[in-house]
Length: 446
Ligand code: NAD
Image 1 (cartoon, helix red, strand yellow):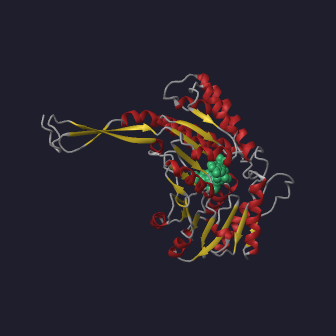
Image 2: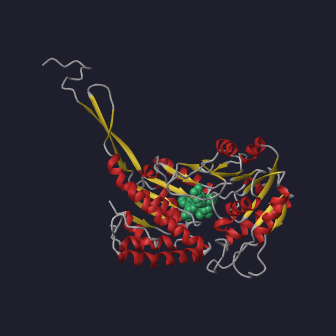
Image 3: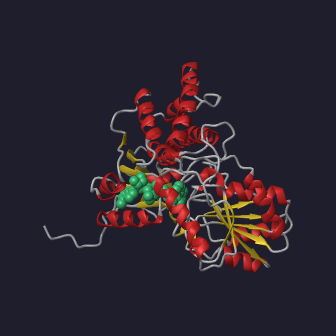
């Protein structure tokens, strides 16, 4: 069993106290790696350096978390199952086998580690296929694994285009499971490719998540969470709460404050100090976002702010934080995942209306509610059909809690207590303990 906490030490520069007493040599390498990895991540996918550094902390935390689960697994082995007289049973949790891990570009290393750490903790061997748009930090992970002596063949990293490198993994008869994070369209293809060999798949797909803001809030605090919920990670986050439902009593003031706050967001080279919005990942993504904005306009929506290149940035795939109003629920901008810094706004009058609008989507990854009324928050947490609900915040995500979506946002849950179980299969061992013959057939005459 590879020692995951060693990998964690190599990657992290956090000042963890070593649970296993590793020496300072790891600490100095760790510090070196974190800033390098964060810089590479920012350069490769465009996210602000501060966010990339945050990701590396989460990467380290994720290895640490699943290292603990790898050890706890031994204690969960051979659990007895109570059976009727003459039988005894115990359960073995075994690694599923060879797993294909196919990941996107928005959190290139973190999304990979959400899969690599539990897969290795479970004792699987893995083939990681990072996104062709941002593979560099995953290759660095390979380097770290080599350094710490992970046996060769345990973690394999294959780069390449989806249809050339990802598709063959999904259909390969020697791959026992596919864990995928990416778009709904690719998720569908992976399910189809996995079907002939009846491979289990877990799918973490896209979203069009709501944030519901009531009229009993501190406006500036709620504005900041709303903007963070949509514009963090350059707006390229599966769980972005990109549909704001705002109570009509405060709608005008709230939207005015949001516009003022969003003009204050620093859009710049991701390596520049204080950057809060970098360029989107590629030209294709840039053109797609601009088309969404243009279509919204032609369908009758109002682009209140943004939707264009910032004047001070002549080059690069930069787009200003964008807020769109005058939305109706048949518009593309209301229904489709943009995956860019684009927030659409709709007013509501009653709690029932807010819930109906919140659930008016094929997706079900996340949702957020902001209100001073805790009972109301709990009611919405129950009523919104999604795998993750934030109350009085949007986006904070912890490896201790399970993550995943409902409806077309996929199925299965990563992280959390059960995260390692995605990579285990359960075998029951049942024993007949009586000395008496079974007695169902008649013994032949001798
Ligand atoms: P994508 O589906 O285009 O690509 C994801 C990965 O799949 C890449 O590695 C790609 O090369 C590979 N791929 C593409 N075609 C394939 C095929 N036919 N067979 C096998 N693999 C194939 O997604 P993306 O553009 O990289 O990422 C953005 C999407 O990811 C958004 O929809 C976003 O919501 C989603 N996402 C979801 C989560 C989540 O936790 N639910 C997290 C991050 C991103």
